[in-house]
Image (cartoon, rainbow, N blue to C red; front, side, top):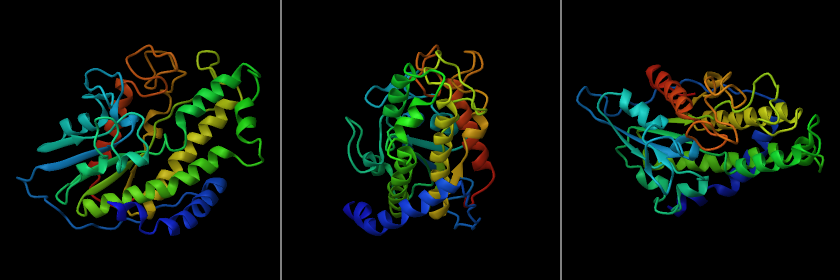
Length: 305
């Protein structure tokens, strides 16, 4: 396992922040090529072994029914819904709330290292990770705390740009080599698996509008934080492309159902949830939307990008 984390790590640290940082700064999109992959276990009688890796956006905290208190994991999260919709599929869901890329190799409470769930015979892997590495929770707390100082302005953006460089863009670029190493380890442990990197859903209005004080961010910080979320997803798409694995867009399918919408229309709960879900996380409808996105990507056939 040590080789998973250290082999080539120095080289990755040198190339990833520069390469991804340039792409994020210039909003450059890189399309991955579609490369046929060797079939594995595709016979009609084969049972698909599916492993779900990820953080709380995968695990579904507080969404009924919770089946793992340590990881706040729901049996109605998107991996469970995807598995239920597929014939002859067994699911090993090791996603865990608060997980960072470190938890791919290290235990988290009673949860074993997530990569330990993989085997050479694993057929399908979904991975949704990176938000906690860039400090998702602390960003929300910081921006909410600063909003009262200038409700109509952009105090959060000014705070993260106080050094002259946007620290959140830097944090996203620094997360890229971590996700890259996870994908390399996934390929090493499950060399025949179809691997899907799942992006994060739309948390805030895509048009840049706000809903203070329902969601307590200053008015001009809404577009800033929206763009930060898009940069995170762009990074994940780029790292997936670099590793020749597939990317699942969940931002587009959830746009218009962000935490500013009315309870009946939103799929992401605000900081004071009205439906069973963690603050600023998908509710049951949000998990269903991500499950649809994954299922549709799987139906397109095995490919890259």
